[in-house]
Amino acid sequence: MDHAELTLRDQPQPRQISLDEYWMPFTPNRDFKADPKMVVRAEGMYYWNDRGEKLIDASSGMFCVNAGHGRKEIADAVHRQLSELDFIGRACCARGGADAR
Image 1: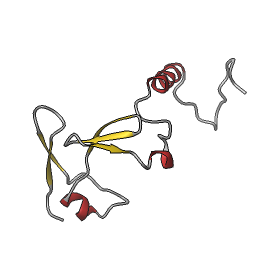
Image 2: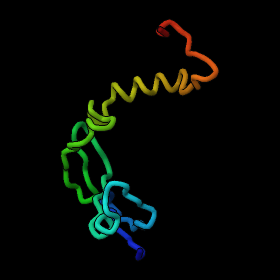
Image 3: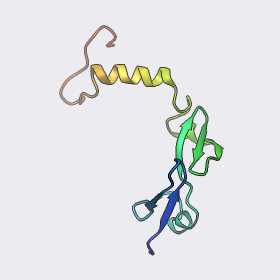
Image 4: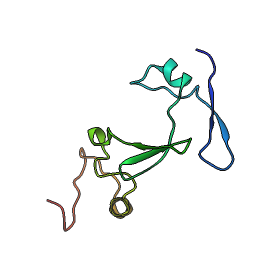
């Protein structure tokens, strides 16, 4: 496949990126590289692409963002949990504490 590049226009100073590292598992890669759909930020139920267009995220509930993007109360709760205990393998131990069930 040929080398592909894209100029991202999401910042005051456009920047050139290589598309060679992008592999889209559910999209024909040649189609993606011919007309890349680059998302640069999200808030609530919307995405914004690198050209500043606001897009509805119609598939977020299928995977993991059905509560919306960028929700401060969710980010704060995740931060508190990660600061206390980020991971424990189930093969060796269990999580203790007041809220353990």
